[in-house]
Length: 359
Image (cartoon, rainbow, N blue to C red; front, top):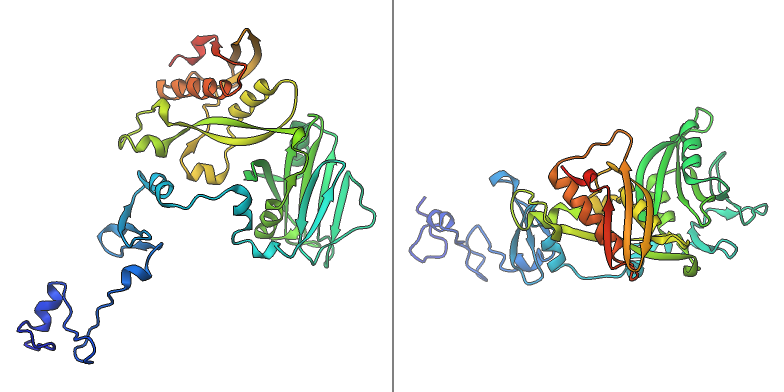
């Protein structure tokens, strides 16, 4: 076509093919209009390119375009994202819980919020708290049970509860389970469980005949009040996203072993408790998305011996375990040593027998 809407000597077709627009601003002439503010409107957005293999782009707050790949995903967002504390994060986008009721259990040192449609049952005790709502069998309960975590999990599995991994809120890690309802009481039942101190007790939160979304919202409001009964520790795990920043393959660098935080009961064996928790490899879904991998589950801690700053950790091969490759075993050594050295009383760490950690 020879149409030249803006009369500049170039046809509309030629201008469009060259990336220009024949539209004349303010004249209402021409069929196309260029939006010079498009980048501004798209700030903070992710764009999926519908051509060229579906590449993903991020428009930062300065209007600059950056391609997002698996290799740079976490480093890109760590560089561009706004930092926020756990406390403030709980308030953002969580308007629904702002008007919820708060239940405080002073005997066991925790508080939790619950929706207005639930009400506290008068027969509740410190060990067994029940919130009722409309509908047969529906409700929310919080129980303190005098059983070890392992024994209680076995009981729940025998009772038809299925594990759904772990979930973390406010540095507190829960084991999540679910069960399907019956013909008389249809719907889904959700449960979270974690060990208390002393170790022969667990705390268990159950939501009957409800949704996963509501269950996780309620769980996100739970927090321990008496921090003197818990302590924050770091668990060191390999982060493949960090490793991929160095090379497209996984070089398995010790610098790629990063920490995540956990709250553990306050006991007289914090080093042993922390190493055992590390070996369980209980990562949250968010941490897995961030690139963290669990430590190789080939090893079982047998004993710890700390003398004059020198810590000896005695291991044995876990049932069904194998030594593993050089990458996995070398990373396991780094993860264990870094986790142990967070304690100020530990200067050096020795793993025995070292043959277990040879590829």
